[in-house]
Image (cartoon, rainbow, N blue to C red; front, side):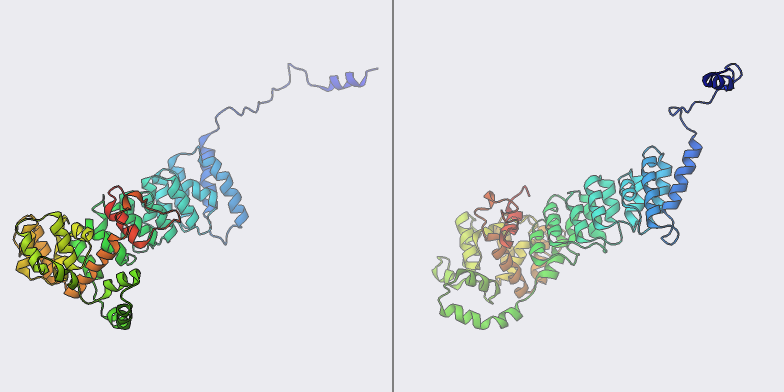
Length: 412
């Protein structure tokens, strides 16, 4: 009798007649056509409208797709990205993966994809390269958090794209960063001065390294008279005078607003008798002491005067001369006394002509506002500015110190 084991063995096919089984060889490269169809089909699925596929199924398809796309060709990845441009609830992992792909894949998605939120875009900026930054900067709408991330890259072309984008909103910090960068990037001031977000404090700092056209735009927008402030603060002037101008901050603030520009007390004590007398003396030579005297007679600090008289473009000299009420011939004489280059006074193709154009077209009250703002803004803490960083321990500089840092620290 056969045992159970012998019976089982007798039922097995003979080795010589059994057909060998095909091994499951996982190391053999699979046909590319199936892979291409698989990836293409999944790309279609994740780009279907919300009404056609549940969110969890879209997410599952996206998770599978991310793994496949890592070894897929550029064309498949680009087609997938194009499909997601239409999807508002695109899976985040897939969206961020494609957003960081090479720019031919990422560009359409970064420029137009509706599935990004601000955190997605900020993360892409921080992980991307200039081409990605530019694509994001061209989006129809950008929030302050995204534009902050873009300008923090320090890339001039990216800043230009942000400034040209009328759908981009800029924060005060973002404008500050662009103002600081614009010292080394002449293309930025003309774009920045037309933005509605720029404030007088930022524009009047930007003035110092902007070109002629940008300077004119700054003066047209931010050189204003002070009639309302003078009227509303009239009784405060009387109170401060009655107290003997005891409070320093009150005195400095009211000096920005008051009608008179020149310092009458300084004129009474000056050996030159008047500002005109000091300017006449300047024709025989200008030294540090005379600059200080002119500054005191004009009602400004010597630091402010030095900055104005050394202005490379010269337009600041036109602002000064108009603010203190000089006549045109005396301004030209003072220009020459400062050793500035000669030129046709009736043409704006030279520094003298541009300075006189500002002098001729700017109202006295408006010139005074600009001059006083410079004096108030740039002189506070200027002596110690070399020891100050761009940010204080509390994370913010005072307005005056921040402006002084931008003006006097050449490395900002």
